Length: 115
Image 1 (tube, rainbow, N blue to C red):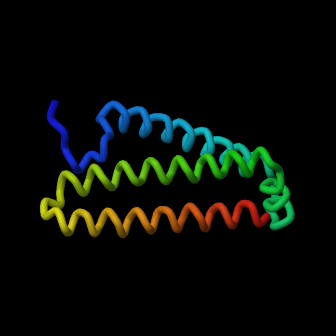
Image 2 (cartoon, helix red, strand yellow):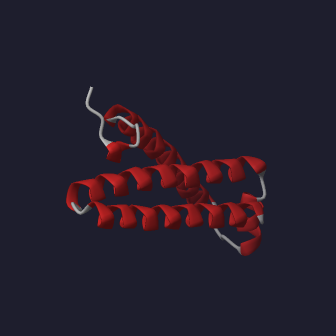
């Protein structure tokens, strides 16, 4: 069996399943928000904070944020692996993007749980 150090122990099937699962979660969340905007005639700050004050919406939002993190990380990894050949530059870019994605996730957690 041939092992590639750049894959970090993952397989293509694993990435395929994670991408599809995260896409389903993001599609469901998008439909949920679209339904909210279509059925709410006037979206005010009070209505918006009221929506996100429920535990179910908070959990669904955190799940969607995590799905974005997974989806973006795999996508960035695939693009950088295909198009950036120097290992140092690819590693540095992966590190920068990974830190940025984690920072976005933490900011999302703080925002959602702060409501």
